[in-house]
Structure formats: C-alpha cells, structure tokens
Length: 65
Image (cartoon, rainbow, N blue to C red; front, side, top):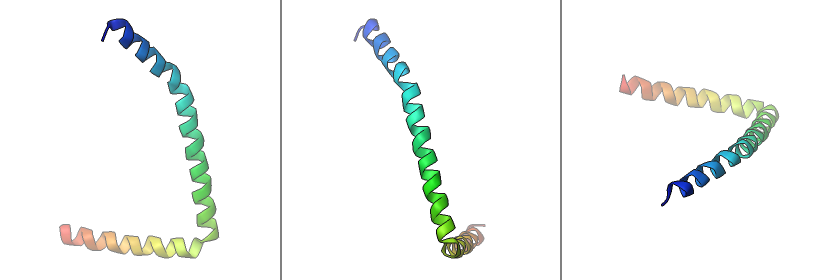
C-alpha cells in the first residue's frame, strides 16, 4: 500500500465525517423524541419499571458489597 493511497483514504474518510456526524445527530434527536413520546404516553408503566429496576439494582449491590 503506497503512502498516496493511504493519504487518499484518510482524505475520503475526513470528507465523509461531517455528513456522518449530522446523520448521527438527526437519528439521536429522532430517538430522543420517540422515547419522550413513549414515556409521556405510558408514564405509570415507566414509573413502575423504574422502581422495579431500582429494586433489582439495590439487591445486586447489596449482595456484591
């Protein structure tokens, strides 16, 4: 592999990074909106799940510690 080939590959990756970062940002914003909507529509279920998860984590922490 020649140095020119490596340089070209690095330049190609560098050129693609801003577009990839924008796509990741858009996907994360979309996921955040979906999760927020789900939590608002199912608040009681989410609260119950959080309490159950907290209980399990406390039990595991007690046995480990």
